[in-house]
Every structure is written in C-alpha cells, then in structure tokens.
Length: 353
Image 1 (cartoon, rainbow, N blue to C red):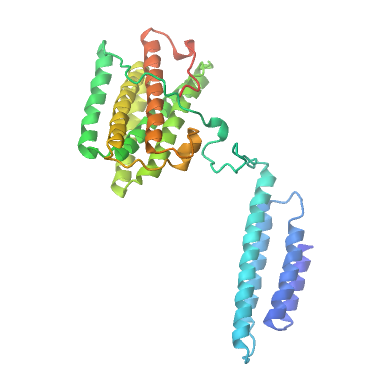
Image 2 (image 1 turned 90 degrees about the horizontal axis):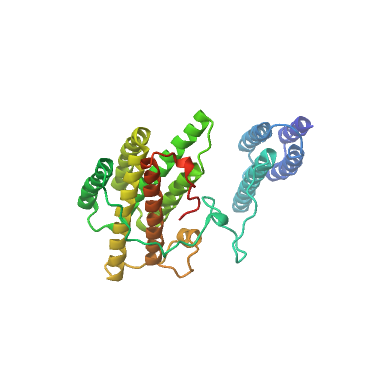
C-alpha cells in the first residue's frame, strides 16, 4: 500500500505543475503515507524510518530539479518558499518526536510521569524522588579511629602523605579540592561493591546487603561531585588531573581490596576523616566571608530536600555529614574483618547517609 502511494506521488511530481501546487500535493500525500506507516503492526521501527527517509530523499531531489519561470512576484514566491521550508522542518521534527514515542512503545520502556510534592514535573533523570533524603546533621564529626595495628598505621600515613600534594596544588581553593576529593571518594564503594558482587556469584553466597550498601556510598559520592561541578566549573587542566588521578586510584584500590579488604576499608575511613576536615575549613572560610555564600544549585536542593532559599553553606554542611557516615561505615567494615569475620555476618548499613 505504501509503495503504491509513493509511486502516485512521484508520478504527480513528474507530470508537472507549479512548485507550490506540487508541494501541497506532496504534503497531503506524505501525510497519508505517514498515517499508513504509523499504523500499529509488527514491522520493525527501523524499517519504517528508513522508508520515510528514502521517500524524503526522492521528494527533495524532485523539488530541487523543479523550477518556476521568473515572475514579477519573485519576493512573494521567496517568502512562500521560506514558509514551506519552515513547515517542512516542523514536519520533520514531528516525525522525529513520534519516532521516539514509537520506539518507546515498541520496547515497552518509558519513564512514567513523576511529579514533586508541589505538583511540578520532576526535572532529574539521574535520581528519583524516592532516592532523596534529609541529611542527619546530628552525627558526631569528631570521631577518629586511633591507629593501633601495623596495617592501621599504614592506612593512616598513606592518607596523610596523599594530602601533601593536594594541599600544595589546591591550597585554599576548597571548591576545586572538594571536586577532586569526590572523584576519588566515589571509587572505593564501586570497587568494593563490584568485587563483593563477583564473589557472591562465584561462591553462591549472599552478601548480607553489603553490595547495595557500598554501591549506595558510591552513588552518594557521585552526587556530591555533580553538585560541586555546578558550583566550581572545573578548568581543562583540572579535568585532565581528574582523569589521571581516577585511573591511578582505581587500579590501586582494586588491587588493595583483593589483597586486604580490611586495609582497603581502613584507608577509606581515614580518607573520609580528611574529607570532614577539608569541608570544615571550607565552611570556616564561608563564615569569614572569604568565600561567597552563593545560592545552592537546584540539584542539591532536590537531592537533600533543602529549603528553596538554601545556600552554599547548607550544601557543604550536608555533604560533610554524608562523609561522616561514610567514615563510620568503612571503619566498621574494617573492624569486622579484623575480628576474623566476613562482611555478610554483620548487618549492612543500607540507607545510612
């Protein structure tokens, strides 16, 4: 049926007539073809799209080869052509939009309509309303694990040594420091969760919820980074540094977790202690007026359920609280290993932010 319609349209083009009449006839015929093509059937969406593309190509080639004789109303004809081009562009956009709907309905995968509490449309795809939370600001920020064993001291001094180049490079640029810190802090949870996942598959055993807990930590750190990027806007050389540091740290932590999970978690625990210290310095500079207390990004307001008039200080405060929770989780995980037990023997702190 579609092929007969196309042939009819092409014969009409060849038979002559003015450009405007041809365009109107083609548009009408194209609309019929479009309706026929988009009737629900079992044909592939890709085949339907390619048929429309072939037809469009033939139509445009015929239009380019068709010309009108010069007339006194050349200005009017030019305006009509521009209007036709605009309508043609709108038709293409409509086809593309309906293609997306067709693809979505064909596979049965589509995002449901999600709204906020005030009825407005939920603007984020990277997280959903049920993944948001209010940070627990009552957590003790002063906790510290005193290194006692040899491995504890290795972990502690490794983190202290890593802080030296960071201080030299960023100095008091706490926004850039935080951005770099979050690119590193998002790695351990992902590596630990991935290795526990593989272990669970390999040994046919449950993880006790620790896979989800560690992946939640990685996702939370990633949201910290997405927030800091809105505030800092990193330069090109900082982006290169991120790539280099992430590549080195990922491989280092991957090997470390394979060799000694208790040392790996202890390292992260001390990293989180340093993060708390860095964010405290950040807040002190905001309080002294050395850093402008700008409005909070929209992504931070929705993710942490902050008030609409939240500021940078509010954002740094909730991020620091998150880091304190991650400190507790990783020191706890290391303690479990030190007691000669497996992580799945203790309840995983799922949803502990």
